[in-house]
Image (cartoon, rainbow, N blue to C red; front, side, top):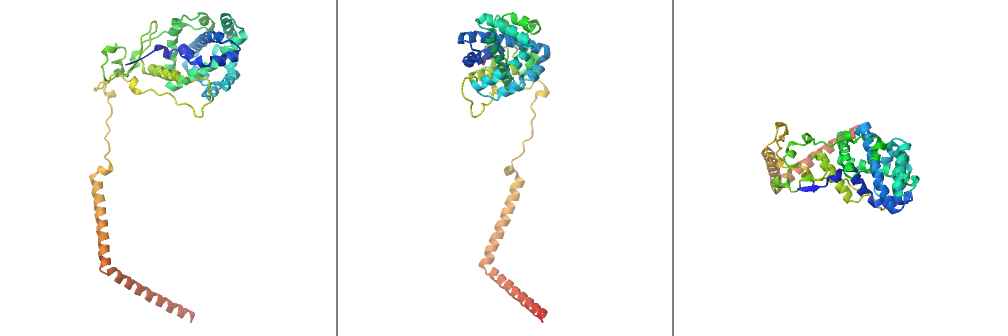
Length: 356
């Protein structure tokens, strides 16, 4: 059994760890010191995640995907596979439009920037550059993670519903709820275990000592975490594992653009499958057994035909060799030569008559 931290499905925790390699780039872009940037990063991510929760709460997950994750600016930024000055410049170019879409209007962006500026002893303009740039990078990273995990709109909505647990556990500033209009009471975690497959339910949720040993040591489950309650669903575990792989690759490290794009993380089905019962729970779950076709080289009819054709070919070759050795073929050739000579004489006689 492989335990994975519940924070791997926390947008805030994922983004905070994901952004660490580019702190220096963000500090340079916003003209902030490194300590100021680190503090501003934590506060900005809390503000952005809360704004995204409020957006999803108002317009639903389909709008998050269609109007935020697939914006032209996000698509342009996804063309870069490394973080460098070119990537930051692209973020700075589109940052204001994207921030306005996430927070709703310019006034809300300014209020958020002012609130963060008072916490890190910086100007509102400096924080605004940091906050708005992060908006675009956040959308890019979440869009990539959702794309790699193949989340549909319903699963994307459930993912958003789980986020207030992580923000509340971190004692987030309640100011962001008031600023964005997010209502955390409407987004509570639910143990929707009915959507998991029956075989999957036989192991998920049990203590490790109850799992059959020797067959499912690679089973993927969420480790227990105080104040965090997550449903053990396949899509959520897959999301957590892909987030873990993504972070281990350190994708936002500062480097030149690679010649080839990195491949999407893959999750082994063995990590997600639970104890399999040899007897299916329902008839519909029984695997369909198809009749496998017999290979041609094992088909007796085909073998007999090949044997007959080969035998006839061998007999014909043997007969040819016997006729050649007995002189039959030269005699036939002489008869053919005599016939051809008579034919030429007849043609010459006909030509002579025509000329006369």
